Amino acid sequence: MVSPPQKADTIAKMTEAAGLKLTTRATTTDVRNVLVHIDATLLSYGALAADAGAVQIVLAEALNNIVAHAGCSEEDLIDIHLWKEPDAVGAEIVDPGRPMPGPLPDPHPVDPETLSVEDLPEGGFGWCLIRSLADDLRYARENGQNHLSLRIRII
Amino acid sequence: MDILLEPHPEADVVHIGESRIDAGCAIQFKDCLRGLLQKLGSRVILNLERVEFVDSSGLGAIVAAMKMLNGGGSRLELAALQPNVYKVFRLTRMDKIFVIHGSPSDGLSPTES
Image (cartoon, rainbow over all chains, first blue to last red; front, top):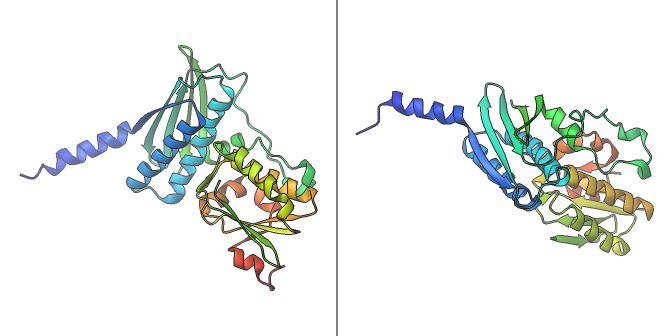
């Protein structure tokens, strides 16, 4: 017997509202693996390649910042929660590392055409990428954990 | 890393066979390019056709490669950037500092400078 369409539709909506929850260890390799998994999952849900790409860029920068700067051990776990909003993918990332030393960086955009080759930057691009693609960035320290939430704009 | 050098009179093409240039392999990428320096001529085209993802570490590694080559009098150009890779260059404005070709053969064509 076919399930009543109303019930199936409700389940689909609940899944969409609950979103995707994942945990990764705080290592570069594990972060890469979870990014690849999230990308494949979003594409399987019918996301456009450009939108899945924007999500991967933002999450890659946020997660790699944690691995590089939060002082986590390789056994520490980072929680990732993604959910769908009308024009965005909402994301919250929770890690047990040390607190952010100051406000969330908002770097002044560099105009590389004004620089000589020797002076071109080789780093510091991460927050520029995050802020180009995501809005409503919020940081909170709760119960010894860092909580970063943001909304990645999608088409 | 999966990197292949294809010399041509017009330019040396460096084919990247990896699907990601990211935090996990940025250092190896720079080391591989450094290892190739002696074999590279004055014009080098980095073929990124197979690369699906570049993060800020990967971008930094590509810029570092450009600076390494510049120090030796060589110019690094890019080819065949996938849309999500191009996005990273565009958002950081680093697309302005590279000559970017649609394909390696475009870069080797005598009609393109």
